[in-house]
Image (cartoon, rainbow, N blue to C red; front, side, top):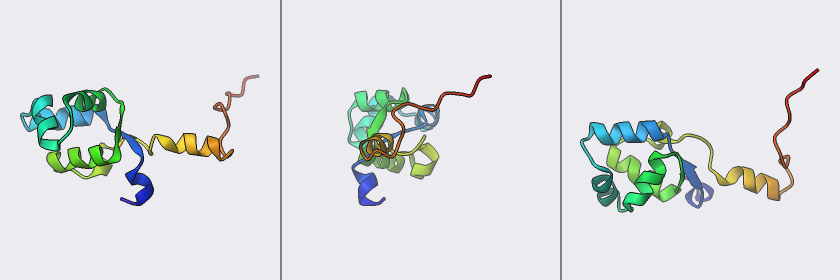
Length: 98
């Protein structure tokens, strides 16, 4: 992972994370302990919330899957960075209607 991604946050595929955890027979608390994060972090990730890049990597190590398999999208901060740089519209474009 490059240094920019290291400081970013990621959303993980909540369903995939939950399924892999259950396949391994782990509770949220057991996964949290093994990955070195809090149970609340696991709950956040399983509910589609953003987690730190190092957390995503730790979960992937424990679950023995590549980050690409669990990563839902680009880093959360990307849109905010583009907005600050003036390169993204403030709101999404509206659909064309006649």
